[in-house]
Image 1 (cartoon, rainbow, N blue to C red):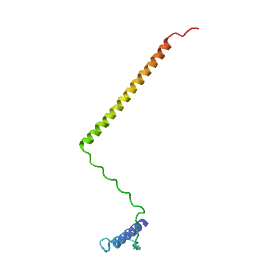
Image 2 (cartoon, rainbow, N blue to C red):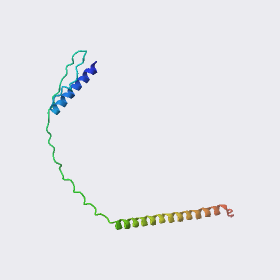
Image 3 (cartoon, helix red, strand yellow):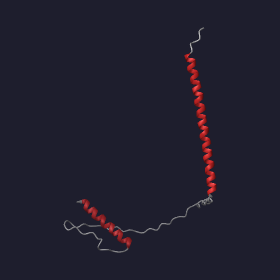
Image 4 (spheres, rainbow, N blue to C red):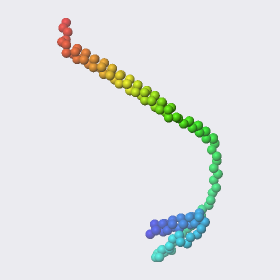
Length: 123
């Protein structure tokens, strides 16, 4: 079977690579030769080490912003109360505008119903 030979060759190549990287030879890690079947010729690839020079970054990194000063509990509490009060004012304004719009729409509707229910003017 062709795939068995390819698998055995891959295992042998991988073991040779591991041994070249670690610098030791372990006979325990060698694959066993198949008990039956033809002998398999295996090629071992050589690996060359290549040095790579890394260039430093072109522009320096921007400086980090200064940390914020710690807030005292009174400042935080006052800010939160001010924000809540501002939010409530906006909500009250929205509620008031909705009520005014609803009242104006109902007034127009009632006027339209009154006009429609009155008899047409004769000439």
